[in-house]
Image 1 (tube, rainbow, N blue to C red):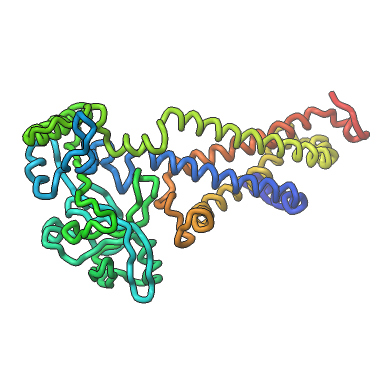
Image 2 (image 1 turned 30 degrees about the vertical axis):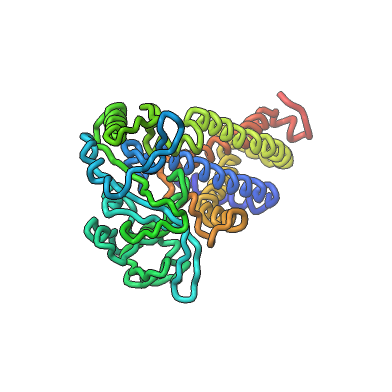
Length: 412
């Protein structure tokens, strides 16, 4: 333990002496940690079943008017009054939710904020696992009775009212005043394939404005454990049967039915190609900085070669020398990784605000905590990065003959 603290103390003094190299290494570690954190989180969000859409792999979502007949003509969609009867045709469904997404303006005090609203039925909150930081979601009865209640994201709540308690406050949308009864934690815009809503209202209050499309999106969650092929066949049969009852043969194939997760992957890319690309990115992110830092470290070590030779002469082993220099580099790299992880969300939030029209410094594409597996992976990357960038030149330098170094040159 005494030796460890001695190494750390010596490493800190050496870092202070070599400010330029330390600053460069620290910057590389910070940028690498931010980039890896972003890439790993987005990959996890798009290709996993994470909150709030934990049932994405057993839920199918479709616009009820998005069907054609065999001649390529759009047919009348599944209107609201038919949805209850349509659900009875499904034998494997667990929950069914209707929703309508619209672009709206929110009036909250003196603030006028454009955002996306989702008018949903009460089952929406049973099908999805949103993290409520205040209040609750509205019930099926409240949705059916057109209750003037709403749920909003924490980010939107801060934009509307600043930092305070939000439940019980009022917002106005399309001329109707709604009471906020729930606030959910922000979630990633990459978690869904369409527009990311920041406010949810009861479906009975929708005016279908400004879209003008008087049909709902239908989300069907099938029972857990049912094979995907079976519940897709169940939905296919129900849709064909619904339109056959109306003497319409819709142009629909079984492979056209996709889960929410499959639809999301269709937007953001197939998993295989993404993971190959991710591997290439990580490899380049490891090798390119390593090559540059190896060159700087070689120069720095040559400047300390006499010091290292003296340490060897008084009994230090090659391993002791490597451990000493590695401790210096690892302290800088780990400090950079910790800083990078801590500032990832603010940095991404600023980038969103500057280039994507975000409303503040909160990152919506990375909303949510960093998975522990990602943190572990980034720290393993940091150790590997430190070993390659410092361990190799240090180990090579310890091969030099002590006597020759003391005289001014020469190798074994």
